[in-house]
Length: 146
Image 1 (cartoon, rainbow, N blue to C red):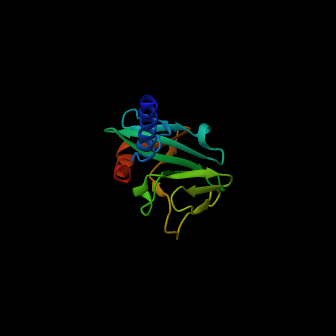
Image 2 (image 1 turned 30 degrees about the vertical axis):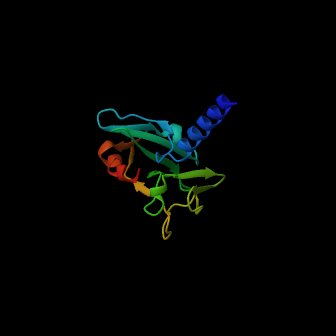
Image 3 (image 1 turned 90 degrees about the vertical axis):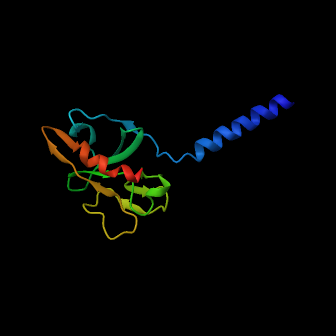
């Protein structure tokens, strides 16, 4: 009986430590080459939200790419200045992007997300040669959010 209590207690500790972890979720990990993150436009220009994780000094920096209703690609940190401390980020649900902390919704197709307390933080990016390009110096500026 003592053995089963120990196993049950160990499982509870393991589950609680995972649930209480202050690390943000890990998405598809992407690496930089020559100080640049390059993602093929053909993989992300589909009207959906695509989440990624870039790692720097053992920290996860999460970001996502979305195509708005006008067909423009944009990159955002998976955080906002209000809810970032909880490290929960956003999720895609149907035609909306939803904050996992405060539950605020954003229409993915909207060209601009503004005038909201909780709003994804724009990540400087550009398109060229069939890729969405993010400089590592730009994404590393967001490390404090994670």
